[in-house]
Image (cartoon, rainbow, N blue to C red; front, side):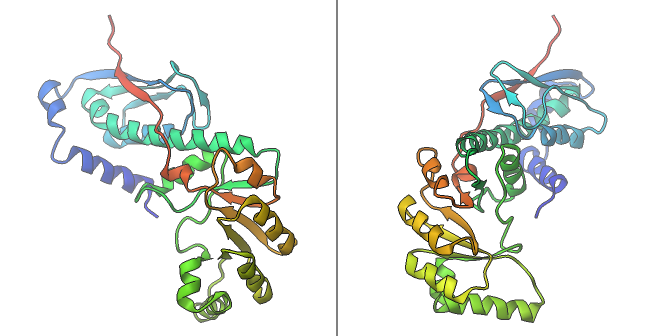
Length: 281
């Protein structure tokens, strides 16, 4: 997983290249100034600390005053951060800081909205691997800030046997057994989850055993409730596929342990905000 410092370094290099020529041409190199981050849309704020790190990366002694923290409910018109330092620092870091804040806040806001809808149940809301390449760490952090939970971070920290694995390996039992053989060979211990597409596949998983969680893929709420009854609390249960703001309550009320929603990270609207120069009159 890419670290935050490495991410910021690469993202700034992508944007600045061989120089922020507009700023270099229009602003004296020693000019000092102040900029203010304004929230223009109600949201759950996320990414403010990462934005702070962007400016510190460009100038170690820049002054960053956080007026709000990650997880705060921000309103349109709120002032969330003040940055004082070399104006080249402020302008060169502006877009990356805003990109991070706007996207992370969009994810956190949508996650909070869905989490609140199902808070009367025991179901936990999960993200997925449907993330922006190299931005996954921050997107999953935004899910946590919004009150959701992270599914596996990547292909390395959990085994999730999906439909293609089942079909390519010759069936559910074959896939599960091959995983356990592989674990023995590699001296590994990881959680094992198996995706099922119907109640027949569910029974195959139960007959075989040796898994931790069963993922019901594109089940209707009625079918899901029946599947949960068959599982009878022997395994953790998860539902995914076509679950959204309109039907998530119905799915959660089936008693499923987890609901995973790819749209938390791959289909969100960024929050409107801006970083504006503060010029004394």
